[in-house]
Image 1: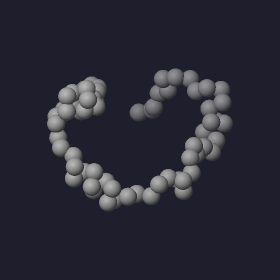
Image 2 (image 1 turned 90 degrees about the horizontal axis):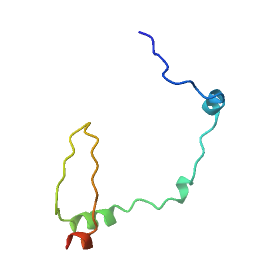
Image 3 (image 1 turned 45 degrees about the vertical axis):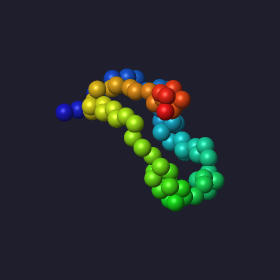
Image 4 (image 1 turned 60 degrees about the vertical axis):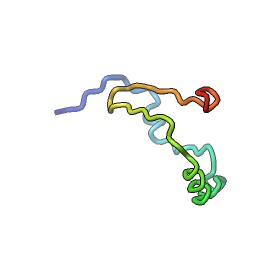
Length: 71
């Protein structure tokens, strides 16, 4: 079975494929991972609701800040 093309590539497609990636930030500038911070934060969390989206349903949900839901 051959793969069919559904769209026509742009005239500069080959040049785009050869282009080097562009970094928008330097990895060295990112803060180091602080496991203790995340562990403390997780310890203070409490579940107030649960929402399950079945796979492939393409649904969306909105996350409200506590002031919006009265907590």
